[in-house]
Amino acid sequence: MAKKKTTTKKANKGGRPTAYKPEYAKEAFEYCAIFGADDKMLAKKFGVAESTLYLWKLKHNEFSEALKAGKEEFDTKNVEKALRDRALGYEHDDVHISNYQGEITVTPIKKKYPPDTTACIFWLKNRQPDKWRDKQGLEHSGNLEINIVNYGDNNAPI
Image (cartoon, rainbow, N blue to C red; front, side):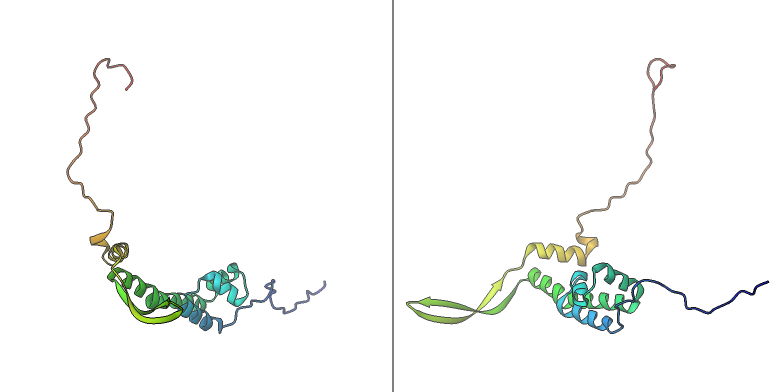
């Protein structure tokens, strides 16, 4: 009887090695927090397909968390502030450049923007949904009683 030859081999996982590097988590956080990058922009930055980026998010929890934190930071610092400014109205410094008879003048001015009703509605619906949402909840109480009465032939189908 022949003896079986046993060898110890590492299991071959197959496929190409991952291009993911642990430092990508920090880079992704910064790219999202500073530029508000979406997945398409991140894939381009790292030189991979969006599907690869999706796999990285599934396989590397630190990468996924970094993306979430970076996007949230950008939204908080920029988007929420812009929406609040539009809802409440705001002003900023600007310049008016004019040309009169060949002479160019630059005049500092303040531009003022009134509150925007749509931004106010959006803000309130999201900050106080119970008070401002479009859909109102209705409660029904009591009993509903249904009586079916058949007039005419008792043998006729209903």
